[in-house]
Image (cartoon, rainbow over all chains, first blue to last red; front, side):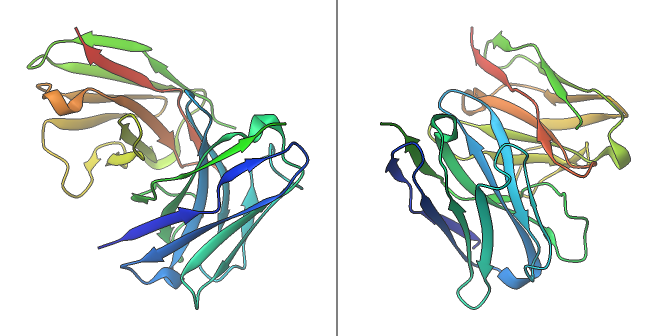
Amino acid sequence: EVQLVESGGGLVQPGGSLRLSCAASGFTFSDYWMHWVRQAPGKGLVWVSRIKSDGSSITYADSVKGRFTISRDNAKNTVYVQMSSLRVEDTAVYYCARGGRWELRPNWYFDFWGRGTLVTVSS
Amino acid sequence: EIVLTQSPGTLSLSPGERATLSCRASQSVSSSFLAWYQQKPGQAPRLLIYGASSRATGIPDRFSGSGSGTDFTLTISRLEPEDFAVYYCQQYGSSLSTFGPGTKVDIK
C-alpha cells in the first residue's frame, strides 16, 4: 500500500525557517517524481515544487523560488522541502504527492497524496 | 501559465441527481493532460480522473470525464451521499502544473 506521511509543520514567525519531510513507503520511491502542493486555509490547491526521481531536475513555483529548497534522500525514501524567509502568505497545509515515473514528463497527475502538514506563519 | 476556470463555483443538488462540472483552460491543454480530484473537509485530495477521461483505480463508474482542448467536464451520473465535496481540475500539459479554483457540490 502506497503511503506518504508528512511531518515538520508548525508555527513560525515571519522571516523564519522550517523543514518539512515526507516519508514514502509501499512503492519504489527512487522511480518517481515527487511534488509539494499547498493549500491555504479555505483556499484551493497550488503546486509548489517538484524533484525528479534521482534529484537531477528541480523546479519551483515563482512564489517560492529563492526561498524554498526541495531535496530527496532515496536511501531513506524521503522528500524534503526547506522553507526559509517565510511569509504570512506561506501559511497553508503542505501536501507531498507522487507524480509520474522518471521516464515520463515532469508534469503528471498526482495519484497518491499525504495527509498534509500545517505550516502557520504568524507573529 | 495555463489558467483554469471552474464553473459553477457551487452546485447544490440532491442525492440521486446528476452533477455536471466544467473546467475551462486559458489555452489548449496538450494531449488532454487534464485530471480531476475530489477533496472532502480535512482530507487530502483524491485522484478521480486522468487523461481527461480515464478513471483512477477504485473510482466508481458513476464518475466520468470528457473533453479536449480548452473545455473539460466531470460528470457524476447519480450523486451518492459521499460525493458531496469539492472538486478540482488540474492540467499537467504545460511546463508548470496548475489547478482550477474548485467546484463545491453541496446538498440541496
